[in-house]
Each structure stands twice: as structure tokens, then as C-alpha cells.
Image 1 (cartoon, rainbow, N blue to C red):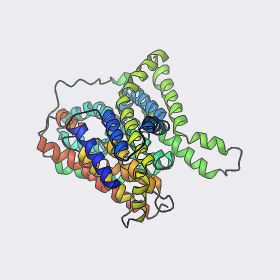
Image 2 (cartoon, rainbow, N blue to C red; image 1 turned 45 degrees about the horizontal axis):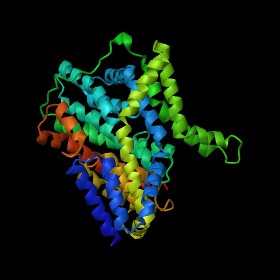
Image 3 (cartoon, one colour; image 1 turned 180 degrees about the vertical axis):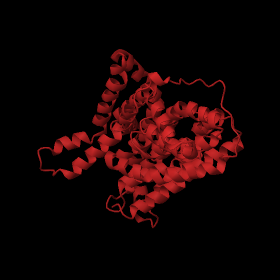
Length: 438
């Protein structure tokens, strides 16, 4: 009976978002309250459950996501992202342009959210297509595969960042495993898949206006790469130090501080503000105002995360999560595949990768035994499932279609299939990693 209630509640959530066109946060609240009554929770605890659900999920991730958005903004507004992309294209040359663009998308995608990264790199795609007569969709798939993978696999992006505490995973280790898994996925879904869509005709939107910096206004290549990759370097270094230093050492608490994502993101933001902003003549007041504007862009994402936390808390309070956890524990199916599959089904139904990942994680988390499956790999497996076959119910689908003036059929043939490749190759790589990572 409990499992039937879960299906009914998820169906209600899907209808509210896709048919009624309700914002996911409100839809999550309504579905959560409906679930509470169906599961016979006492009415006087529902309000407290909502509070606990919001606080428990936003607490570990709020700072990371907000600071990440502010860091991405300064990297974009300073011209550092443009410098990175131009440097890599120059290094690889036009004969290997897809590989250069895939690497560009990967590096730029680490600090920048998907939508921002795509809009930022559109002028590069347009200008290269015009200058060298290279098919736009060929280049777009190379870049978007990387942006999509970083969005689904790597902290500090919202979904993997929020799933880490749900799985009791480690942010630094998840990042390391995510980086390892990203490489083969990007190679297959990016440069290799892009060859199959070279023939699809596309033209840029003439009305699209994106700032392109003059050469003299760009930061140096070294500084651009340094600021973009600093979060990865610090989180990786902190994780290594935390493992290398004995927990009885007086320095051990400091290694824990270094690997903390909240501290790392604050350090990276301050470094970027100084080197990309203040040192180049911009005032701290201006940078702060820009950063606050950037943080407003992620408010909707934080609302979705909060809503997913409420539904997860209702299921936990009512014992649903324990029930599903028992099913996961006793299932002959790998928890990695189960997590990936649940996320994929929700993604196909709802469209939102963030909602799919968080909902799947909330359902499956209680059944994850760290002695049986690595929780860091679970984050990536669910992330891969959440990227499955984006179609007409996903905003990313329409962004890709409109920016390149494609038909729905051609968008499915390029963008949607590319996302499916990311998802299938992603879970395949995770399963291979699980053979050697325990």
C-alpha cells in the first residue's frame, strides 16, 4: 500500500508541474501535504515536517550554491571564460575543434551553471561557424555535452551538491570520482557523437546579443584558468590532505576545514574578486552588487531543492523511506542501476534534471549501505539518470532549439539523443568504477 501511495504522489507531482504548470516548489509542497494525509501523519506535525525538510536539505548546500553562482558571474563578466575558450581553440586548431570545445565546456562548466555557460559560449560557436564554415550543431553538441555532464556530475552544481548530504557522501571524493567519470562520457557524447549530427542545418538567432570582449580587455590566460579551476584544486587537495594526515594529528581539524566546500567556495570567490575584479580596476561595491544579482538567478533552484527536501522528509517521517530502503537492500538489482533508473524515469516525466535527481535521491537514500555501494558513486549514478533524454518538457530542450533555429525533430535528433548518450555512458562508467572503488 505504501508503494502505491508513492506512485500516486509522484503522479500528482508530475501532473501539477507538467499539466497545471505549477512551479515545482509549490507542487512539491502540495504533493508532500497530500502524501502526509495519505500516509496518515498527524495533522499537527505536518508543518514541523515541512520546516525540517527545508532546513535539513538547504543547510548543507545553500552557501555552496550561492557562492558558486557569484563565482561563475565574475568569471563570465571579467572575460575569463572567453579567454579560456579562445585559448583552447587556438591550441587545438580547427581540425580538432570539437575536442577543443568539449574541453572548453568542461572547464567553463565547472564554475558556471549550464544555462549561463551555454549563453556565454554561444558567440564562440557562432563566430567559429562563420569564420571556418564549421557546422554549428557539430560544435554545439561538443560544448553542451560537457556543460551537461558538469551540471549533473560535479559539485558545486545544485543537484550533485544537494545529493551529497542525502547520500552521506563526501563532497571532495564525489568531485574526484565525478571528474574521472566525466572524461569518457564527454568523449563519447561530445566529439564522437557530434560527428553524427554535422549534417543538421542551423542558423544563429540574429536577435541574440551577448557581450564579446576586446583582446585588450581580457584577463591573462593563466589567471583565467587559475580562477576557474581553483575550486577543483582546493577540494581535491583538501580531500587528499584529510586522508593523508592522521586523525590524531593536531593539524587534522585544519585539513577538514580545507576540504569543506563552504570554505573552499568562499576562498575561491574572494580570490576571483581580487584578481579578476579589484586588481583590474573594479570596485568591491560593484562586484558585490553583481554577485547579489547572480545569486538571485539561483533562487528558483534553491526553491526546488527545498521542495524536494520536504517530500523526502514526509516519506522519512511516515516510514516510506525505510520501506523503500529495505526493498533496495534486498533487491538483486545494483543500487547504482536502481538510483539511475528512478532518476531517469522522473526526468522523462518531469523534464527537470534537478527535480529528478533530488527526488530519486530522497527515495533511495535510506537503502544505501556504504559497505555495499560507494555513496559518492551513487551521487554520480543518480546524476547520470537525471540527464536522460531531455525532450519537450525540459527548458534546456527549448533553449537549444531556439538558439540554433532548429525544428523539433532536429532538436530531438541532436540535443535529446546527446543527453541520452550522456546518461547511458555515464551509468556504464559508474558501474566500471564500482568494480575498483569500494
